[in-house]
Length: 213
Length: 223
Image (cartoon, rainbow over all chains, first blue to last red; front, side, top):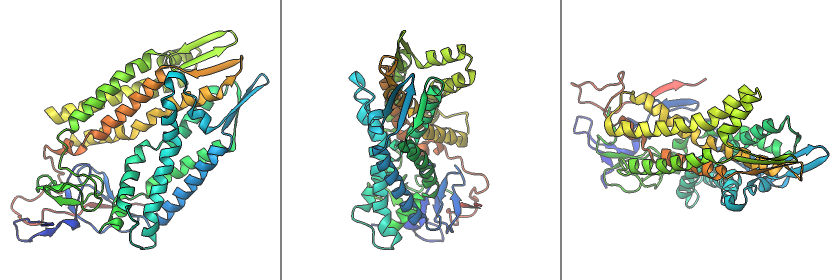
């Protein structure tokens, strides 16, 4: 296979694996050397192309593992409870997902998937992909498929959206009843902060590069 | 400077690897690649129509049904915000209106505008359209907040006869509308925005210089 680009000019064929195409606007660059904590932007659409960070792999694994532990814990601890006029009611994450009943029962598995199943799957795949990479070992079997799936799941992993949703619900209830937060609610609050910081560390290009053949 | 398409190559949207024309799967990440998805706009419009179709009942039906000792009350998203405004909670009412009415409608208008821009050309600059697309793609999932709020409220507020909240019919339509709009935005190939060939000024290729058409990306040192 002719894996090179023939310019027809004086510089001869360029091997294709030193080129990168901006995923947003398709402009081609020769791969610049980007040092840690530097970022390479596309000159036309200004999207970040490469943004390596020192020890990003190790940090990402640590963060993914802590999010997994927090989500698992949050499943079993009480989440929120409410009290008004001597009546009390507590709820857990699983109960929240199954709040949709009757004709809306279709939403219950979707909500559980968005806030628990998809984030857990995505982070487990990320750990599976990154663990060999940080030890400079050859990529795990099916690592490319695993990382592709993890990337496809990203927009559907909504644990942090759920955390904000809880905050909004609390504000709405605050003048109506006394709401107390269980340990699971604090876990989700911490989890949200960690999820947001993983996005900063994630350099997709760098991970693909380290999985590359 | 040229795009992969102009060079007769295919760029991968996942891993940025460039492959020769006719390659089906990217050699680095193994994902399916194409220079431009010819059905992209069709898919965008199909999901968009579904999203709009679900958004209408999502606003007409009640989002929450509240049963109290004195009676029951069901309010739509906009109705709830209007009621809050009547009680004097203008701040909260405006936030709810922006989050549940202005943002979804803005998303629909922007996606439609992007499609029209690709088909007919646009007065708006490529850079701004790219920014708008990124905003729509980023905001998409955050619209699920309303659905999660309904879930939390209706599972938490179950105080026997005193007060009971249960989800209204609108919640499923609203959730579907958010999901379809996300799919619509995901199917839009932003590279089509740039296909009219506008190049960045500082790095425009010199007509007389046949030399390398490949320039290093701009580097910016972050603090």
